[in-house]
Length: 114
Image (tube, rainbow, N blue to C red):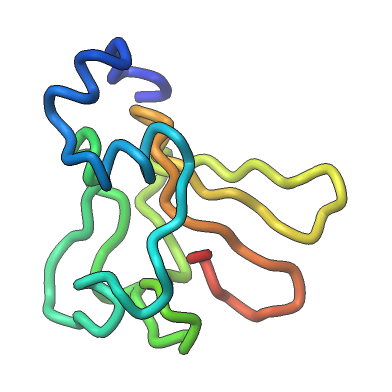
């Protein structure tokens, strides 16, 4: 699955909204408490907004109070974790397209969203 969804920047711009492109391709950040999924707890599967790859089960979502959706476990091989050099933050990305899914901060419990 790793890197299985590859598109040019022009192809990404054609399928993503400007805000999705900013977040998923330019690694921008959605404003805290602004996203529709922060307080959304319906049953189901959360998929990558870029490529549609299933990333998390709703049963692994929790209210972290951070302003972004938080999950304690992703589907096997669906997400990559890349620690920053200082070890204080781990970036979480979609294994298929590389779109950022959040961050995990050292010392903040199970929080998997930035």
